[in-house]
Image (tube, rainbow, N blue to C red; front, top):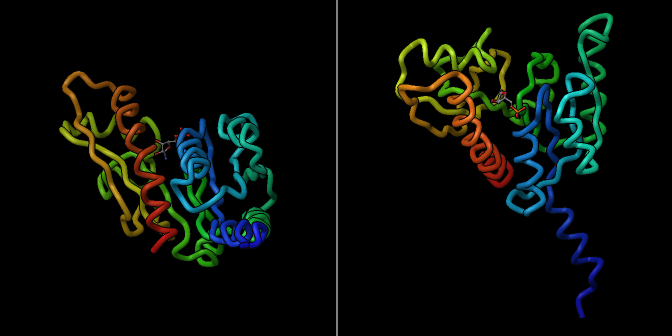
Length: 207
Ligand code: GRF
């Protein structure tokens, strides 16, 4: 008869480790937690790096017993100490994949180099349009409406040192309606983010 402990160990060893970074409500983080718990992605979340205390993403982490590290660059005397703290935390959690899910701080170059090709970001537009410095949150959707676009969507891309410019790994599109406001468009895009992000994570961890 097969040894149940060995079977369990071999199943566990196939689970990869994900670390999520978030600055806000964390609905994309929740989509990852749900997909992991349903077995839709072959991974578990080892930890959350939160930009600051009090954000929704931290509450979600607590509900799922996920360890949290709050790393706010303003609490460090100089950027190299922030980089060092982030690196040390990541070395402990040892992620196969790092997911920036609504994270508004630039990742230090040394971290991008150390986890090269293993950091992905979700952005609420069809990159390369409406990406780069200044395009975050509501501003992205305001710009899409101001430009009179009839389509928008979301993108997951690899993180490189150039903001929002790494290779695109996946996109989902939504129509822009004539009566859209930035908030109604954001909500439609966010629904698609929650589908796209687990899909790309699965693809990244299994290929
Ligand atoms: C999402 O629109 C994401 O694309 C952007 O920030 C927002 C985060 O939302 N980078 P949430 O915190 O995951 O709910």
